Length: 368
Image 1 (spheres, rainbow, N blue to C red):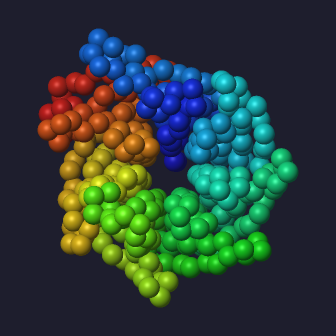
Image 2 (image 1 turned 90 degrees about the vertical axis):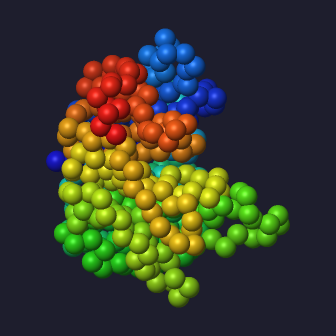
């Protein structure tokens, strides 16, 4: 059984605050939080607050909840086979669309960049990926991809700089890449046997050349190279790179987990030299992988924390300085790297009750 995921959004009224994840519950409710950085220890408990509670009226477990680019719309999906879209501006919750098209539990949804219009992708146990598009205020199925032999577990849109490209990871072990070529047509490329037993997660690298903030000559167009990370049932994280001939090649294999990798998240970047990836696993561990030299492509893992239960999802804030972690302990915890390079828990949210605390226990610190 899959656990709800978490996502970062930027509430328009809190532009100077850090956003906190949307938290999807086992039933039909979704809570939206915001996170404010507080200077003093006495104010730590005030860092996290609920800004909205959405009663989705889903008839079964919610598996994913994702805010759109502007933080005004919320998409949810459920085991009831439906995808729903809500307008959540100003604390409201207006149902915009109830999308039916899948024939099994819907695991994940992903918003495309708004420069391509209002587009949402969903993936399901029914082996299908559906791309939904809003036209003149009405949401309709734009494309259906049925090229997998088993459950499709993860969908992720590439950075908008590359065009409209969707990566899809499946339990059949393959990863599909769907590229929009115009006139309603999609080109499909498939990486077969990407992960033995199955692929659980995909995450694109940012369209920023590592170190370009410092080294890039002004006026020179950067040489973008498409990359993404995937995590699978073979306990591995794999990095993929598009070659000059348009084919995808395994670039790196990252080994540290001792059980299924449940999620991977490539951190956003503004062009600093270091690239960062977070991963979590059935083994209860979360690792932070860093690469300081793009030319050598050497990645080093650092254990963020060992949890007492499976860790389902990891998600970076848009500034990439805070990591949200969602686990089988029914909590969302927020982690930040201290000046001495240690990762510390700065806040946690109990998903069942919506309660918030911000203490870091000595035991947690010792286990890192």
